[in-house]
Amino acid sequence: MADVVIQATNLSKELTVSLSRRKVRILSGLNLSVLKGETYGLIGPNGAGKTTSLKLMLGLLRPSEGSVEILGEPAGHKGALARLGYLPENPYFYSHLTGREFLDFAGELFGIPAKEKRERMAELIATVKLEAAADTQMRKYSKGMLQRLGIAQSLINRPEVIFWDEPMSGLDPIGRRDVREILARLKETGTTIFFNSHLLPDVNDICDRVGVLNNGKLVAEDLIKNISADGNYKDLEEYFLDAVSDKVRPA
Ligand SMILES: Nc1ncnc2c1ncn2[C@@H]1O[C@H](COP(=O)(O)OP(=O)(O)OP(=O)(O)O)[C@@H](O)[C@H]1O
Ligand SMILES: [Mg+2]
Image 1 (tube, rainbow, N blue to C red):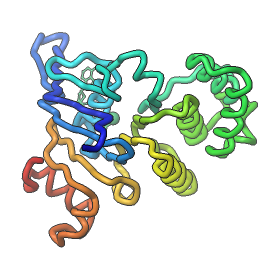
Image 2 (image 1 turned 180 degrees about the horizontal axis):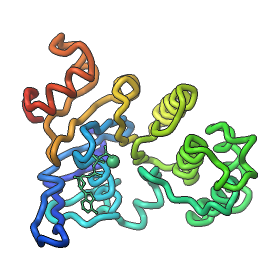
Image 3 (image 1 turned 90 degrees about the vertical axis):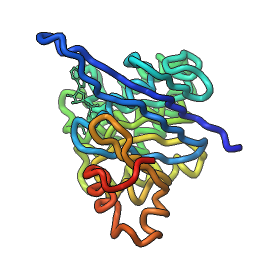
Image 4 (image 1 turned 30 degrees about the horizontal axis):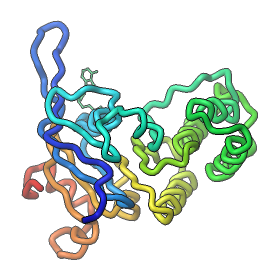
């Protein structure tokens, strides 16, 4: 059987609304697995629970019920964290640092030896095409430049699995194409990729499999090749719209 890299079982998250003390369920019974080398795209309307799912998988949030295993370890396990890369939805950076200094800091956190760290930094700065701005303070970066740097930092430890929250956000068409190319290369080297995005044509091009989250529930899941091949759907957008109107049978 193929290796399962990400396994969410009955994953649920409830929050207490502070004033009314009312409990709201923002994720309900998510069962999801991603195989080694697979590219999985989680899509869904704003507020569906995509970022919440990702944070639960990384151990940044605690589930109310259920569990997650990443690379065979429980979410948040240090050994597994060292082998994954994370691009947050709203990356917060130390704006007085230059891009290069920030990457250096990220490399330090992983304890990468100096020479190797310098090599990887140079390689990643080139990969995300930030050469001209690498020694500029991040407070002078545009949104797209920060996003490129966020992508670079998520790869500094040569992760086996990456979790990217809206990697194309804020990028111009050239940037989007660059990210598609980076993902294609990561895929070639066997990296397991889990990301969410609202850009359905990109999801369609990049992913092996997609899941649709709506109101905290996984309402549809299929291989991209099935969605386009079985003739039921013109494209991923139609599949998405059907799924969020409860027309697609739950996975
Ligand atoms: N800390 C919090 N306190 C209260 N509600 C929260 C909190 N975090 C998330 N939520 C709620 O949980 C739901 C899911 O949020 P989440 O950020 O996971 O959605 P999303 O699918 O990533 O949306 P988007 O596409 O807009 O990024 C939303 O209704 C949101 O308002
Ligand atoms: Mg989100």
